[in-house]
Length: 238
Image (cartoon, rainbow, N blue to C red):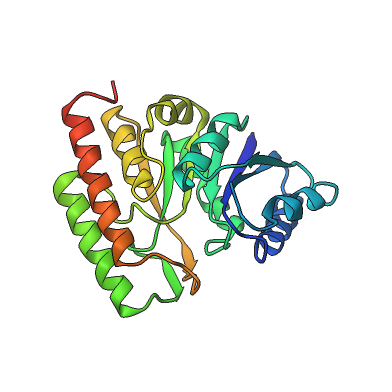
């Protein structure tokens, strides 16, 4: 088996080195082949330079360096489709869910699942550092809206730790049209429409205290979820 790790990054120069060294430390001890793709989403800092400087130290590391910002979903799509792994994981640059947790995900592919997503809402999950109450409230409201407009059959669509088989990746991501706030909802909606088998697995998650998601972002997410609903009605994902 070959595992691909995709890490979208925007202005992550202060954190990306620590995350990549952590990923390298874990993967270098495994008995399978792997690659690590960092997709720089038009960072205004020296994220790309930091990653480039680590290529000689971190085996399998590759930088995809976009000069313009297109959104996290764009970076994820680009990385997932350029990856070569039989299993392809995208994770956050802040390391809020550490790469070693993928060990609990991979066996599900042998059970016939096509996609395994990390969840903070099911039994066995561990939220080590919680979000402020207001963000928790907004997150709950968002989950309710998604459940009403685009039922996904999962409890947590937004955790940034998801593994796709190569087959699922190559069927789903070329159909992706949303690249910022609600791209997770869209790719899971496409997966469900195409009848891929999705498994939720518990994760340990540490809240990123530097996260910039605010009420305005949640409003934008709402409009993008509505767009997913319209796309489904319009047959855009055929």
